[in-house]
View 1 (cartoon, rainbow, N blue to C red):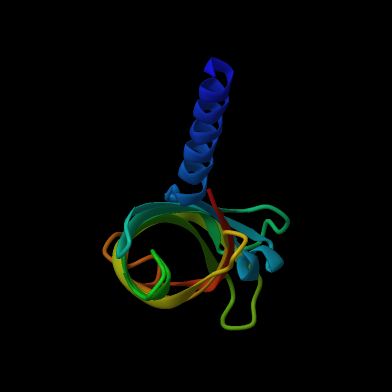
View 2: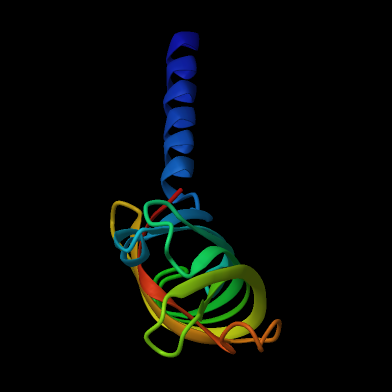
Length: 173
């Protein structure tokens, strides 16, 4: 009789453990911007899901193949609001802040003369983006994002606007 009770207890415990692993909420996501990567610039991201409707994250970018890209690096923290049926998926709005280093160039002789590279300058600004995040059954995500921000630092040397966008592929865990 004692062996049957022990066996029943073990079975019920394993069912309880299995149900907890299946229903746990995935709150972390790592991703890469494939459009930027094809252009020689790596943009890696981490996103933490706060609840079903919002998340915070950080994107870090740097060139990895080409040395002649205008951006030397970028760091962009963001906050997102989601308007979908699945947790942290569907249509999204994003508020972001970006700090980046941008190369500058100067023509020596008129419009068609040789180009000289100047010291890079730091830019920093605030922006808004909109997009859509698809959540796949295997916990992979595909995200389409498009947005723009306003630079507030060194606006005499680098553009006043910065872009934000791409197609990102990620994995939730």
